[in-house]
Image (tube, rainbow, N blue to C red; front, side, top):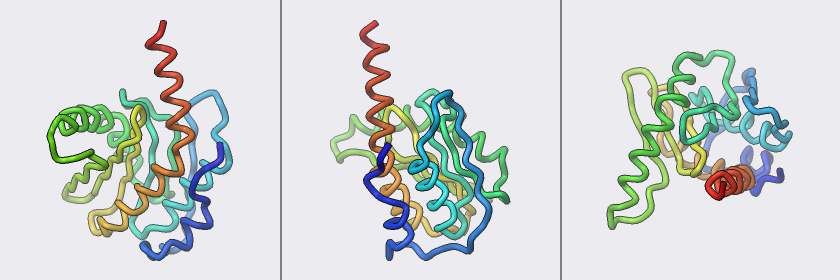
Length: 167
C-alpha cells in the first residue's frame, strides 16, 4: 500500500517537533502482511511526537488491526483505547454527524494521566495514545497526516465492508 504522505515528509513537517528516538514495536493483528510503508509511517509518528505513546488502527468494533507502540507505553491503556474507545468513538461520530455544524474529524479525550485522540477513518478507527502533557495541536496534526497516509487501508476496509453488506 503506497501512502500519500511518506515517512520522510512526516519527519520534516514543521508542525511537530521531533521527539527523542526510542524503540517502537509494530504489531499486526490480521493475516495479511501490513506493508512496510504503513509500518514505517506508524513508527515514525510515534518516534516523532514527544509524549506520543502509541498509534493504533482498529475496526469500528474495537478489533485491533495494526499498532505501533513505544517501549515505555502502558500496554493496558493502549489496549483499552483501541478496544473500548473505538466503538464509543463511532457512536459519538454517528451522533455528531447529524448536527449541522460540519464533519467531525477527531475527538480528543483528556484523562488524569493520558490523552486519547480518535480520528475519523471510517470504517476504521485511528487512535493516538499520549502522555497528558503532550501538545494537543501536535496530536491533531499527526492524526490528520496519518488519516491521509492510511487512505489506501481505509479504501480496502470500505471495499470489504461493502462486500459483506452485499451478501
